[in-house]
View 1 (tube, one colour):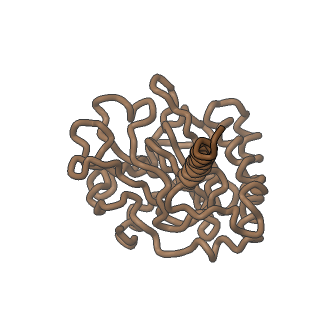
View 2 (cartoon, rainbow, N blue to C red; view 1 turned 180 degrees about the horizontal axis):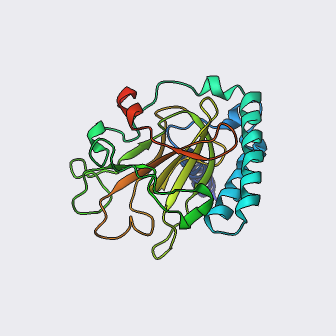
View 3 (cartoon, rainbow, N blue to C red; view 1 turned 30 degrees about the vertical axis):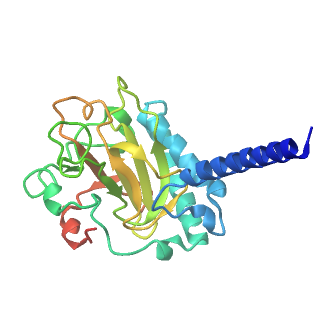
Amino acid sequence: MNAKNMITIFLVSVGLVFFAIHACGEDETKQAPPGTVSAGEGPDSVMTCEACRKFNELNTAIRDGLIDKTEAAARFKAVLKELAEFAGRNDLAAELSGRCVFPLEGYPSSAIGGDKGSGYVEGGYDYFDGNAHTGHPAHDLFIRDRNRDGLDDATGKAVQVLAMDGGIVVAVETKWEKGSSLRGGRYIWIYNPADHFLTCYAHNEAVFARLGDAVKPGDRIATVGRTGLNAYRRGSVTHLHLMHLDVKDGRSRSVDRFGVFSTCRFQ
């Protein structure tokens, strides 16, 4: 083999190696969810947030009716205590605090359904009833989507879901598929250690938040979608389902925070 051919082979080999390295690096950067702050950056990493894993498992068992309500309530109280302790060790209540942010990026408060928050209906709701619960103790935040394609009519783009308050992501569902009986579709539960709230963001399309992530108000956690038993139906208007639970004493009580929206930042 002459010198010219050897140089050609060497240059091609170097080019292939460079391409492979570049491609792998590009894939890795795409794995980071935009706009989120990982709890893995703190003293207790996301991998050691055992309480987050426990809550996610318990939440799924309650949702699917796989656990007795009395046992579920006891475990719920215990895991909330662990979450509060985890947050305390990392000083997350202070680190993640801040003025609330309206959960739909680029939308005003008029996106809230119902007349002055009348979409909130307690209706005997009990968290421990799981997917079989009654009532609608939540606010639905609607986007402009007349053709029901899940995109904003004006921009043609997905609408970003923002964390209303700071907190720790303690439950995530990303595997909803058409035909599923799961009412919330792809959802996110965030525990706010400062105010001891649990907030559920449901019917999402893309979910950026990961179990154990620490998010600040305004962080992008998902995009608005049409996932869930009823939300997927053609007659349903595309919206974010937003529910708050007060869990400060280890129990679960739904809270109407309609009056808080007017104090939030819009971005």
